[in-house]
Image 1 (cartoon, rainbow, N blue to C red):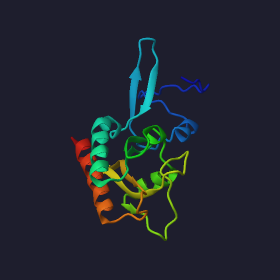
Image 2 (cartoon, rainbow, N blue to C red):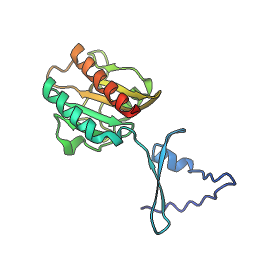
Image 3 (tube, rainbow, N blue to C red):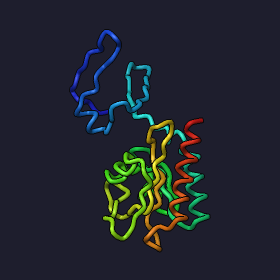
Image 4 (cartoon, rainbow, N blue to C red):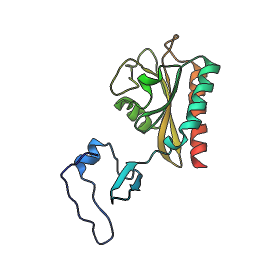
Length: 179
């Protein structure tokens, strides 16, 4: 745990303000759910809640299956990081932060399909080794909670099957999240 030196008081309604600098650094948006943890020593920890992160096992099985059937790499992310991957080296992508471009595509709520006229969108924030071919946002109960990402592979330009596959992954995860 890292000390920030910032102290805040609880108001009469039991609220505490998380400083803007911390919200910006941790990429916490207005209305975003936070999970609260406590320990026996009196420590209270706020952690960004990820509904997709709760489905890591399901997402991993789905990514593996689709990757095997379609012979293409598959990544599944929550709003911040890759939570499941298949067809790419796990240690290079798993739990890595997604790029600002991927975050923007999720916020736009449309399926992104790379074509030859568009600039490339890197998948990861810290590396441009993998470029997005198709990005389908996972939308559950009206909120974007993640994305199904098919990175570019041999053919370089995604086809209709790639688009349908990423949409299917996204919709399955959304349905799973809604219970």
